[in-house]
Picture 1 (cartoon, rainbow, N blue to C red):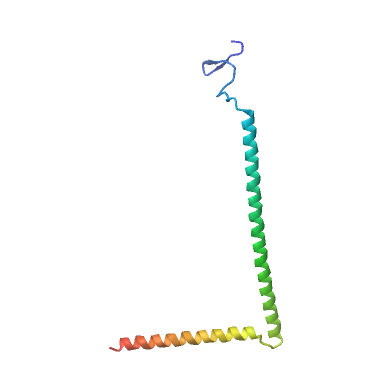
Picture 2: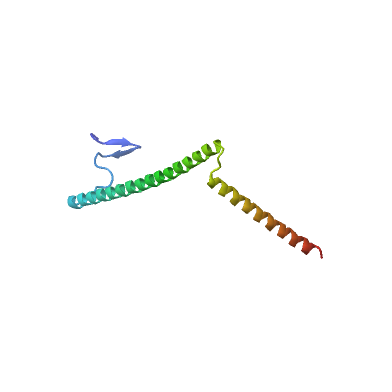
Length: 119
């Protein structure tokens, strides 16, 4: 019992434990490693392309919002000077037309409802 160990009442002999690894062909192992590296580089390239497209689309959106903000600033400065920009006039007249159409539609519906209830 020189090198043996006693564990839980059983005598264990020293040596390799577990499953012995199978002899893998080194060329096949190297090729798998190279293929894995190629796939990893391809995934990385796709990920960076996606991120670049995402950033460029966000930048375009930001530019559009800046232009819109600048337009609103100009409108405000014009109104501060007592001028009403034509775009605002068009918006206001468009809203007034929509309201009048909605009110006339409601009035027609009310007349129809009253006519149906008069029986």
